[in-house]
Length: 490
Image (cartoon, rainbow, N blue to C red):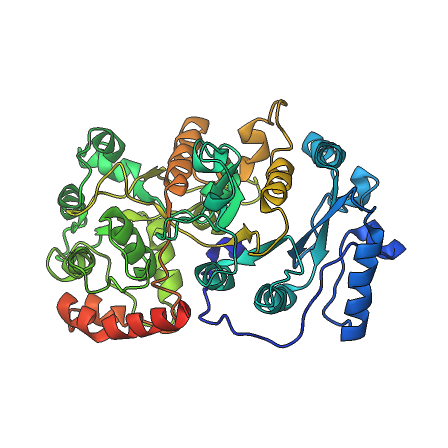
């Protein structure tokens, strides 16, 4: 589960790299069987021959060949002849749906479509050269946000709002597809709507149920339902939970413990704030100032936090201290609960934590709004249709229908298909279900902010230990944020 633990990084580079990596329909027998083609080692002459082969393969005026540039093998496409062409096939009915859907799309739109493995660098090269040249190599690209966002901002991606009707699913119900809102009123980057994508990398606020019960504190989930779960209420709870439980004169139970990055980004979203969500920095905004003040006060005014670990061991120490049973609240996640088998969901460890972990939405800040605030920082993989592609509406419809392979068919039971996210956070099924619903809700409120991916770090230690004030923190970094944004959006 280490994958979820890694912080996804957005680079600042969208540089032009010489050389074009071409996308084309696979021609050789081996390529047809695998559905992938690594073009990065092919010289320019071979690439030009590939392009000629693509044109020759199109029945004149009959079929459109659609290519999707990616950097890892994906299934299924027009090259596959059996559901077992996917080496990971395990008999799931959904795999048959995807395979059968290929033929349906081919007939519906009179097309063939192919996944093309260009490697990650090859995708970047193709985007930064062929689109700028006015002749995209591929009809669709899989992108990471570090290079997808600059491409979109700089006009290399099709704005679907100029192509699709206003009542399209992607703009209304978003049952199948959704787009990343960059705040520019356009729809450039899109992805499939799926529950697993929503719930992964979510960090709801976790709490020790028995600790709150022992201190006669009402369940925060009930407070949230009534709109009463606020920063002030959270501090009130944290103060009551911070105690000297054995009477030796030293505090040994704390209201909160958490790694600073998770704390900061969740407080940002709960207060309707951001640092780097647009071309203009917002670190110096009043709402972000309230977030910095809250972090400082938690440690230095209210003294409700477990002593911070100012060493290279900070991540492990602050992330997993809750397992000792002396922490009231902490940033929770499925991967965190799984890392040390909190509730032994595999049956291998044979032991579980003595208390129950419960997930709740983060409390709402003074500038926040419970109904509109985000709950998850955008990250990961999206798709884009390049500017200048032929008939972008057709291309979108093919991609949309690829994602909509289960239309009219009953989806597998969630607990069966997403069992891992259900089982890791609790001993009992009822609590597992409740925690899953909170993760799903939090993950559905995704927002865009590049604060932690601008190429430099922030000295949160000085804010936490009280040697730097929130105002000083803002003054120190606001110009760096703006300079990084200026570079990024170029």
